Image 1 (cartoon, rainbow, N blue to C red):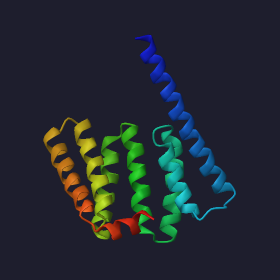
Image 2: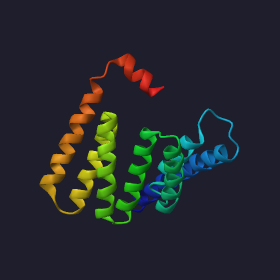
Image 3: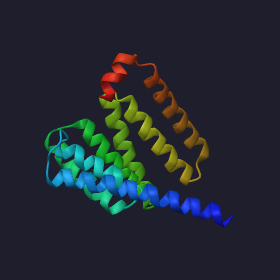
Image 4: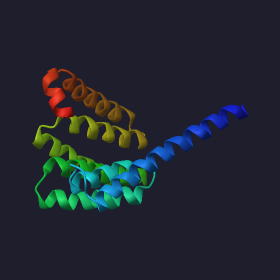
Length: 165
């Protein structure tokens, strides 16, 4: 049994080191821009990299990204950053505030006709309902998220390849 714990400890440390390496790399790029990524993309990437490590840092970089996105009227990035802010509130246990943010993200995803964004936010909404013990409503949200996710699979291969690059 001790060996299993040691294996999990080593795996955890390896994952943590890899995450920290990614964060350090993104911070370096933000300070000394030498890539094709914009300041907005780097802040969003940093917010995502911190999500399971430090909620306050996620919030910091998401807010910076949101301000840049608002300045450029970049609705897709507004969607991403607001979703990250909803994640922060969810992880802090502020479920009602998180839900309010997710509902704004959902409206924006509808406006943008963004199926991937809808799948993500509906899943997040399902998590909120699950945490509140509203399992039937959570299931409805998860099933709707799956429908959106499945619609992405039916996109033609050349279109998907263009989206990936």
